[in-house]
Image (cartoon, rainbow, N blue to C red; front, side, top):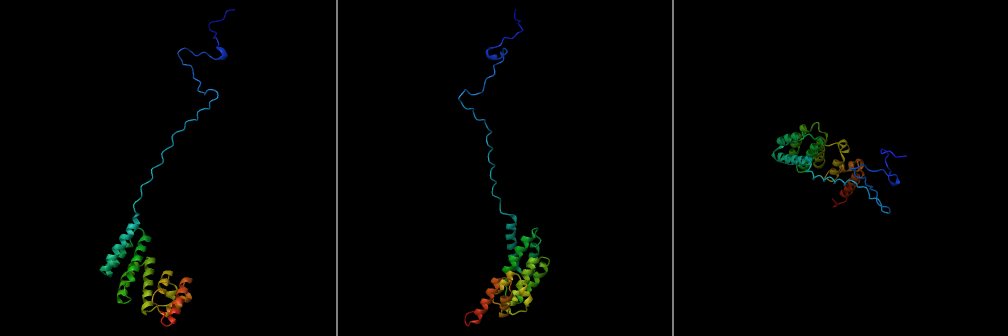
Length: 209
């Protein structure tokens, strides 16, 4: 019984014959006894470059610029100083602006004698500080401190209601015995009460203060 030409002869082992003109597929498995190659991974991405240092924050140089401007205005007279304070308080950052004004008030008030010069200065600044709680309170407390050190009029309520800053400054200043006694009894913090009591004791000892 003859075999037909259409019958395809098999290769040994059951492998199929590769059609003519097409390369035989290569077996990519490693020879027996050798480990398989590790799969290739994509190269790690380069770490992003570190950002360049940022310039100084704008609010910091504006704060310094405000202080410089206020110092120049303060030397020119109370009217010009009041106008400069009003301009600073229009800054779009109210916290920074009020902080700059309070720093200026502290620098100016500590150098002004508690006489007509301080009173004129305080009256010129008071209107422009209205509506700005922090600097307005600082100006009121400087007025109280000047009264305590120079025999002006003041009330116990003003001193006991004053801020921690004001009470600390008072106990370190040459205030009257009545003010020290009030702070020793009613200051906000234990630290100020003790400091006031010690100053009273030193004043009571001859030649101690």
